[in-house]
Length: 404
Image 1 (tube, rainbow, N blue to C red):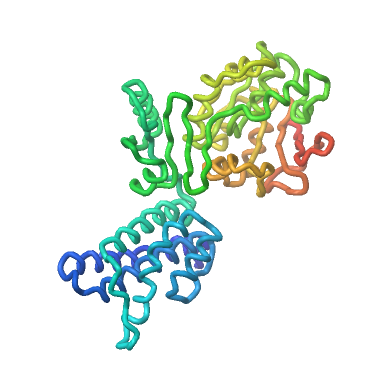
Image 2: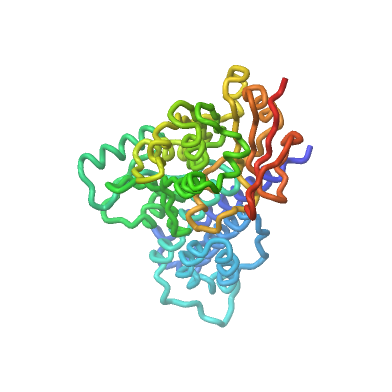
């Protein structure tokens, strides 16, 4: 039986990392016991970083070229991860050791390379690659730690400790380290920073931070007030007092608009499968302050939880909500903002199965509404009864009637 493609990729990545680790270990032993053996040390360090870079490329879906040239490899890596390529630049001094050290050549090898420093460069690249391939190759969970701002106090530290306990992630001391340095030292991809201003998830390699914000909710609510309407509210046919179940809560922008539409006598319940995103959203809905349009009041009324709709819907009573809503990840991001990248990294990307949509039709008394990019058909969605869009909008809302 042929193994799934992702399993083959995972095994190749692990093999590259294992071989790189063997070379790195050999270079450490030589430095400790025979530091004068510059050529063998340089050779194994060059081999180690070459294999780590090839592990990263493999995890990124790129077939590594058959080359020992670090310059060529770093150029390819830079197309996918400029920060990683930049971190690997100092190790290019090891390039001459790739081939020349194997044979008795007349070309002299550089004698000015400080091998302990070169070892530090390779180890740094190894930490960065390990953080990336552990998540990209196997589609595993995000590797991150929790810390505070540089200037902290007992109250802030206690808040960070509570976040660490809530998410089951390590709390590390920030000291005077940059977030990028924390990632390097801890071998992770991101850092959840707890500061006096907010709680944010920082990705230093992409120079972006994700933190809770109601996004376009206020603008959309103002549009409704001014008579321009909202295609999602129209697709749901929302009225005051209605109940809505948002199965893909995310950052709760749609849930906030729905909560405003159904009013104080209505009810909006939201579930987010990813524990980290759910925690940030739940905290933001309770803490974020915003003036005008009744947005803050609408946010506070949302009943937000962490949970997977695929598991929860079968446990719910028939016709227990007027509307059940889905906003799956699109194949292509609608918003070009760098700030949207973290959502794509931590959100649930597995397609929602047809059985889940059918359960939603059982739970909904009026309709199931599914957000979809125009021209991009989502898998497993039953034939809709109608589609609703607004003007030149790039999205549309599929409406399914409830099941029998």
